Image (cartoon, rainbow, N blue to C red):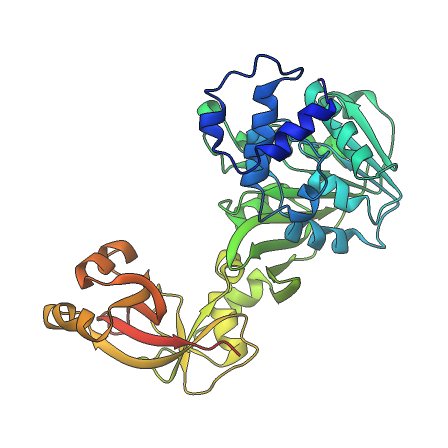
Length: 398
C-alpha cells in the first residue's frame, strides 16, 4: 500500500469529482493504486454526514466501501463511549472492522484490543489509529473464535458486532445466521469476561433475542434523528433480573431516553382510545416503536391511542417533553373520493405519512396530486372505529 504524498493529493484534488467517471480514466503516471484512491473519495462521500470528525483527518483510510456503508455513526459511537466511561479498564472489540467503535471506546478505556480476521483491515486499522493518535489500542489479526480458544487473557468487557450480511451482500437479521454465531460463542466469552456488549440489527426481535441470549441486563434501541440504527444488548454473567429497555434518540448532540420493561408493557391491562383525533397528535420516536413500548408511552404521558395498530396518539394538552414528534391537528378529513379530488386545491404540498392505512405514503401523495414537503404534515391512518382518515397537522417545533 503506497501512501505517497501524491496519493493524498489525488484524493483532495478529486474529492468533488464523479467517482464513476474517475474510474473510467487512465492515470498511467500515478505511483499509487488509483482504484483504492477513488474508493477513498467515494467512502468519504458516503460517510460525510455520519463521520465528519473522522473525515477531518485526511490520512484516515477506508479498507472497503462496504466498511464505510456499515460503519457506526459518530453520534452512536459517542453514546457508546459515554456508556463505557468509568466502567472498564480493558475492553476487547472482537469484530474490529473499520474501528469507529474501537476508537471512541479507547477515549475512556485504558487498554483496548482490536480483533479482526482480515489482514488488510488490520493494516489499515493500525495506520488509522496512528493518524488519530491512539496509542492504547492493540491490533490483533485473528478470527475472534480462534483468539478466544487459544488465549487465556481476561477483559473487563467484550464488544462484538457480528456480520449481518450474507451471500450476495444480503442482510441477515437472526443471531444464528450472523458471523460469528454469537449464540454459540457466548459461553466461551463469559469464561474470559463477566460482561459482553452485542451490537445487533434493528430488525431483530428484542423479546426473542433476550430469551436466546440469557443474562441480558439491559437493551438499548438506538435511533439517530428518529431513524432506528441498531440494538445493543448488554449481557452480565449471572444476572437473572428482567432487563431494562432503553429507547434512545440522538439528535444534535443530545439524547432523549425512554426506559421501560417488557413486564411493565404487558402489565398495562388497557389504555384509552380516542373516538376521533383531539387537539394534538403524537408520534413516538422510532426507538420507542422498535422497543415496543406502545402502551407504556401512552400510560406515562396520559395519551389516547387512535387505533390498536396505528401507534399514533392524541390528547387535548400539549406535552412539551414528549419523546417524539408533536403536531397541532388542523382538521381531520374522511378518506373518500370527494376529499381526494379537492385536497390539492387548498394543500398543494405536504409531508405524508401512512400508518395502518390501505395506501402507502407515495401512493397517497400521487392520488392527492400533491408535492412532497412544505409546512403541512398529513397523517393517513385508521381510527378506533376502523374508519380511515386524513389528519392535517402543523409541527410543534418548540
